Image 1: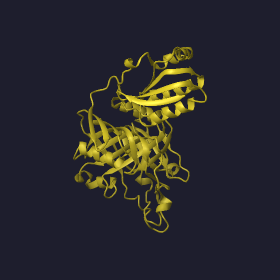
Image 2: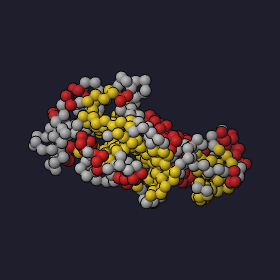
Image 3: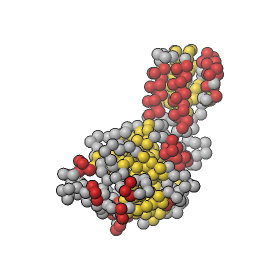
Image 4: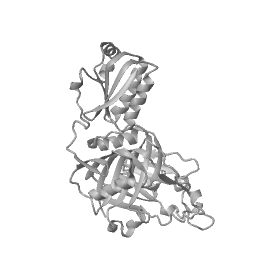
Length: 404
C-alpha cells in the first residue's frame, strides 16, 4: 500500500493505493493523526486505487471521523472503487461519511456554514482571522488580596466567598467546600470558565478538580477564594490564530491583542492546542499554619523549591488548553489596586486548565460552544499559572474590553 498526501484548494488529499487491512491500517492511522495534530480539520481520502478494505481499516476511519466531527471537521471520501463502496454501504459507513464520485465535486469551505465575514491578517508569520462586534465594556473585579501570599499568612477571615453567578471568567487561588477547616489545605491554582471552577489543590499528590455550574444553580453556588480576579461581558473581538512557522508564544499573543486594541485593560479567554506549556503551581497552601519556620518569604531561594513547582522544560504538548487572563494594554492600565494582579515587569496574568488531547474546532462563530464542549466533556489534567513562553500552533481567543 502507498499513501501520498497532496494539497489542493487548501485541503489535504490523501491518496491511498492497494489494500487497507490489518497490516496497512496503522500507516493510514498515523497519516491521519499527523494531519489532525498539525491542525487540519477537513481531510479528503482519495480511494480510487483501493481495492480492499477490512473492518480494522473502517475502525481507523471511524475513530478519526469522530474526533474531527467534535471539532467541526470531517473526513470525506472521494472516488471509492465499487468494491470499497460495497463495503462502506454494507457497514453503514456511507451514512457517516460524505462521499464524492469525482474530485471536481469536492468543495472546500473551511468555515462554518453560518460563519460571519472575517478579517484576515498576518503578523510576523502568525495568520489571524478576526471577528469584531460593538460591545459594552465588561466589568473587572479584584478578589481578595495577594499581600499575604509571600508570607503564607492567610487565615479564615481572608477568604472571599464568590457567588458563581458573579464570576463569568476568572483566575486566582481558590478551592471548593463549605467549611474553612475542611478546605483550608486544598487551595490551589484556579481558573473559572463560564461560571464553572477548575482548580489544582496545593497538596503532595495533586489531582485537578472542578465544579461545573449550570445557569439554574449559579445563584446558590459559592467559591472560596484567597485572591484573584474575575470579569464578564460580551466579546468585542474573537480571533483565530495559526502559526505558519514556529509556534507562537503566549507573550506574543498578548502583545498582538494589545496592539489590535491599544490602551485598554483586556480580559482574554482562549482555547488552544499546546506546543509546550511552561506552567507553575503551589506545592503548599499559603495559610498561616503553613508559614515557613525560617520567617522568610515562600519565594526566597531557601524556601522556593518546597513551595513552588517551577518547570525546567515544557509539558503537555498537544493537549487542549482553556485559559483566562488579563492584559494591561498600557502602563496606566495596571495602576493602583490593580498592580498586584501583575508580576513586576509583566503586563499579563494568565491561568489555564489543561485538558486531554483532542482536535479543536477552528470556527470562530462557535467559540462559545467549543469552550463549553471542552470544559464539560474532556477530562481535566491540571490547572496552572501560565508563563509567557508557553507556546501554541493554533487556537482561538475571545477578548472583552474592561472598565477599570
